[in-house]
Length: 212
Ligand code: B1M
Image 1: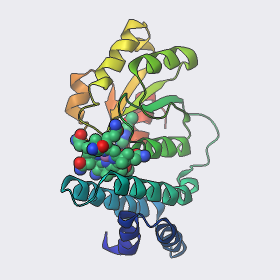
Image 2: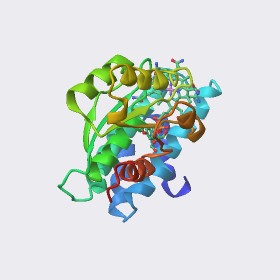
Image 3: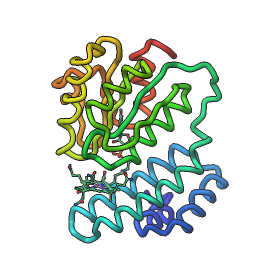
């Protein structure tokens, strides 16, 4: 985090103006978008999470940091585009029911779109029924679910169940991810794939569909 200390500190403080300026000056100085994201922004959000868990900061400060990160991410977004216009596949993505965390999901969506996938984003707090209904409607190749809370993870197998009930489970691949989610959990609930971060979500999605 040292290389991007001022940026990380601004994100932790929720100082949007400074954080955006620091992101821009890191880009101007030749830093890679991936490094800025991983070593600056995500590292800062991990610190925010730790401070929250320790009771040093509270929900409003977490929200402010989240808003700050989102503003910085806007500057990085164009740099994740691979410049490919042929769609690699359609992906329906959302954060599961009861869960309002969307930064990680948005990053996954942004990187997948940049890599050539067509993304349909259902937002946050998406119920199993909504995932199933939208899957029937838009016929995606992949249904991608994000969860950040251990209490909302059970909505993932419920969504798979809803796809089964609607007789469409075998028509789509299911990918899951989010901080508390693991590869083991993906096996347990019979998801087709798990990705630990936005970059590997792209690789895993390509593997699932057999595209390069
Ligand atoms: Co919340 N929160 N939060 N929060 N929050 C966590 C997740 C927590 C770990 C903090 C902590 O206690 N240390 C904790 C969860 C504990 C647990 O269940 N294990 C927690 C809690 C408890 C809560 C509340 C319950 C707090 C309260 O109200 N008392 C509440 C719940 C609200 C709800 O959802 N119903 C809550 C609320 C919030 C805010 C709204 C204030 C805000 C979210 C704002 C927003 O997203 N728009 C917030 C934030 C910001 C966080 C932390 C600090 C940061 C999350 C984040 O954006 N990280 C977080 C602590 C932490 O994660 N370290 C915390 C950066 C982001 C890039 O990473 O989302 O992990 P992440 O995404 C990664 C990977 O996980 C992966 O790729 C991404 C990029 O590499 N990934 C996927 C994600 N989805 C994927 C999907 C894929 C593949 C990969 O395939 C489909």
